[in-house]
Image (tube, rainbow, N blue to C red; front, side, top):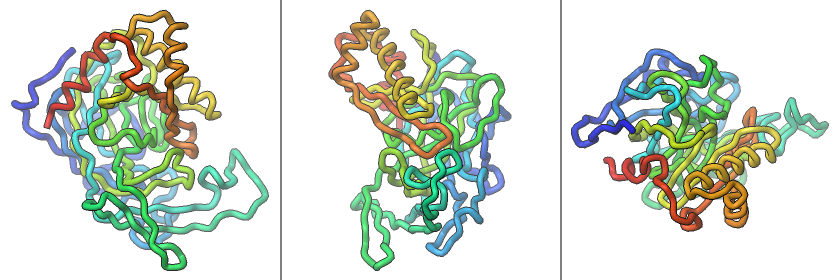
Length: 338
């Protein structure tokens, strides 16, 4: 394990200009380099690049595919090498503007016909909602067609967090996969640690797609999308076991994220990863681990509208018998950073 003393390291900053965002995950020259343990403050734009500002806006005109989900980066982490695990801990995740935006668009979303799931029903129209942030009350509010106010809980997180993909691939910013990417997992909130296997020197971390609120599945096609000001810290861990898919740790739970279509395959990927992780952590036979996980597992659906779906398989740490350290106690250490 390689780690730095964060007390001796100044905060680094990454605040991209409008023409400096990327719409792909890739390897490349870092926009900023940080040491493991060094805090980084990063500004990210919303999925529409900040161009959708009113209810009469046209989402597909201001942010035509594939120019959606702009990413800040790449962030180089010194010392990270292929095969290592990059731990990314979210120290704070805050709205950078007092409003967010959500939409409904034709042929997009779980309840619409799409190119891969066509039907003969009329298309939904295109519509925009502007949500006002109330940080004191931890709520978001917007108006309906009839002039009524509706409300959602404010729970900011990043829908897109990923590193340079394996084998030199370049992947679109809407794709989730083993490198992370557009996971759209509402669990990636302040205080959470995400673990990704490094594929390229310095890892090349990308982050974006700030979301002020999102239910499981993001069924309308967008969350309440918003610009974000986030402070994070990283560490580089040498894995004790084989990590193929993203892992997540909170104070209370461990999770494995699977990405696939159909949904059952994403759940299968996540479940298999969790069973193997618990077997290694608790030094259990694989079938004993399967039995333990099977009786206590929970699932969280990240996204049901991306090119592939994302599912997190979750287990409360209380259900684990005596364990080895979880990835070098990276979460516990990083949670103490400021």
